[in-house]
Amino acid sequence: MSREKAAPRRVLITGGANGIGAAIAQRCVEDGYQPIILDRAGTGAIPCDLSDAQSTRSALGVALQDGPITRLVNNVGAVFPNLLEDQTLDEFDAAVALNLRSAFLCAQALLPGMREAGFGRIVAMSSRAALGKERRTAYAATKAGLQGMTRTWALEEGAHGITANAVGPGPIATDLFSKANPADSQETQAILGSVPVRRMGTPRDVAHAVSYLLDDRSGFVTGQTLYVCGGMTIGAHHG
Image (cartoon, rainbow, N blue to C red; front, side, top):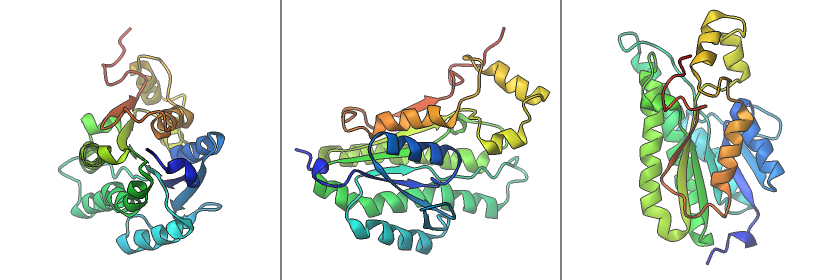
């Protein structure tokens, strides 16, 4: 039987100071959790360079000082866009360090507490790009890698009451996206036109999916990737 309810309902969120991560943190508050944020900056966040293993381990030590954390959202990530011929080794290594290795380190650090509680929820922020996207060699590789780790952890930890799932966002209207894709540009309109639901996603759309997977009632869902992409994994809208 789960002993999780006897412990504080804390959620560790990497990269939770801005964008999708901030929306997840806000939804966690609404759901009655206490978000613990690891990020470079941000009010209330534990300062951490998640691309650096020692910095990540140190921040995790601080986060766990108040006891075990049984929910984890591996949200942090960066794109490093480039064609295969132009993708540098430094970019590829940086993508692995930030997008993939940080998730491994966080899950490994929180695992003993989850096992002790007989309960755990791990959610990885993958991407629709894991299925393939131009100029995304490093990004797609690491996001697909997150899905592989997620499925492996689901198999290894299911008997301990721990689930592991991924969320794969499609085009999401963050500040970063809006700056790179003006609303009135032809390119942005082409993106909107290709989404079957005919709109961009919002950070709250992604946070809602994460909320479902973090819930203690979602214990029979594990090893899955939930795409929050407006139907783009089915195919582009033409009409």
